[in-house]
Image (cartoon, rainbow, N blue to C red; front, top):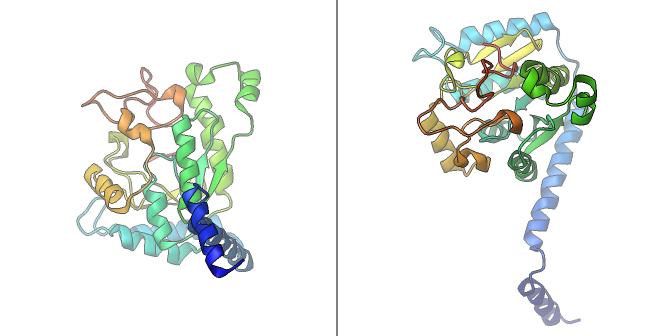
Length: 286
């Protein structure tokens, strides 16, 4: 086959709807980079530091980054918080993501490519949430890790009875979110979350850095001070992946059975566990 014949053959392939070779090459390059970083991490792995040392780091970080107090004008910027976090913890960093707006996963990946992103796969998620998780895994420079409960939904139903989320939502969250994440976080020294003070009154005093006694590691909330407008601007300016449910009346997205649409003007978290006194799943204790 001549060079001209090969050129014509490739042209015909593209015209007939064959897969884009450039996309295939980009996907292969992405996999190679991800594997290379995984190899580097294995070679440079070090033991997890003690709780007492990590607690001291959290205390010193809070003193350094919070200025004159939580929410004060002189507290650290998001850039300063993330640079400090990477300097202190290296590869032992996890990002928690509910796969709603994915802002934090995108943001941290700009500072720490191939960071681990933990997604609590409860077995009760909306299909849109699972699709968002896959898009993040396929396109961002992160390692998405699904954190699974000890029991499947069917096994939990057999042990506790069906629809535990209706009868005891706190216990359901504990079994399917809190305990699995706590166990997985034992491999890390810090977890980064998207907790914001604007989210709800219960989060109004969320710090940038804190010792997480429940999970025994440092917790960093780099966008704690961000307003809704700033989040929206970051999404727009960086073409961040968002869960389509956000534009369908679900400003806060959790498990499907416990999440309902919110009417305009209502509190953004009022659709979570609607009709119950519960307002938090238990992952975030301020």
